[in-house]
Image (tube, rainbow, N blue to C red; front, side, top):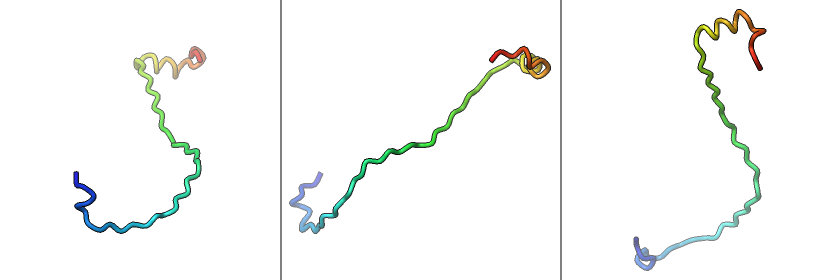
Amino acid sequence: MVAVSKLGDIEYREVPVEVKPEVRVEGGQHLNVNVLRRETLEDAVKHPENIRS
């Protein structure tokens, strides 16, 4: 750390900042992974009526 007094002359100016409340929605991603045996998947393709929702 350095003491402010050691920095010498400092020039600055104040800048007005207007902060407005903002609702921000980030886009998200979702990954759904289902693990099935090959036989289960082949049976589902042949007989879709047997699939439970």
